[in-house]
Image (cartoon, rainbow, N blue to C red; front, side, top):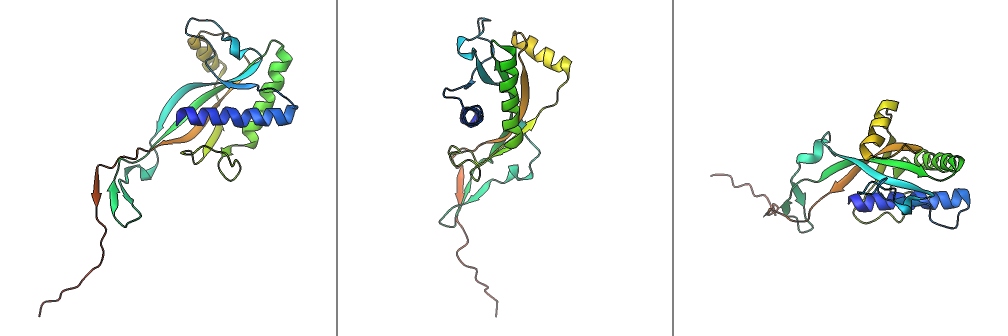
Length: 190
C-alpha cells in the first residue's frame, strides 16, 4: 500500500504540473534524494522528487479494535483489525536553475493546497485498496529541516514536507468464523 499511495501521489502531481505548466514530459518521480553511495541520483536531475522520510502508525482511531467483519452469508469472520499509517513525504525541487526549482515547488505546493484529499470522488483512477489520501503540510523549523537534510547526507534543495494520512493495511486472512444467528426462538416453560 505504501508504494501504491506514493506512486499514485506522484502520478496525480505530475498530471497537475503537466496541465498547469503545459509540459509534455514527466517531471515528478518517486526516488531517494541521495543514493546509498552518497551520490545524487541522475534521475532526480530537473525533476520534482517525492521521497518517503517517515512512517508512523495511526493509533487514535477508536475502530481499530473491531475484529468481527460481517460476511455476505450473514456469518462473521474474525480478522485482525486494519492498521492505518501516516507517511511523511518530502517534496523537493531539483533543478539546475534556482528559479525553475522555485517555480516547480510553487506549483507542487499549489497542488497539495488544492487537493488536500485524493479520493474516488475527485480522482477516478485511485488504485484498488486505497480509499482516500489526506495531505497536511508539516510545519517544521529551520533547524529541523537542516537536521533532516544533514541526516540524509544531502545538500538542501527547495522543498516542503507533507503528512499523507491513513494508508490502510488489511489482510484478507481470517483466524476464525462465527455463524450468524438465523432465528431467535422464545421457549417459555409451562
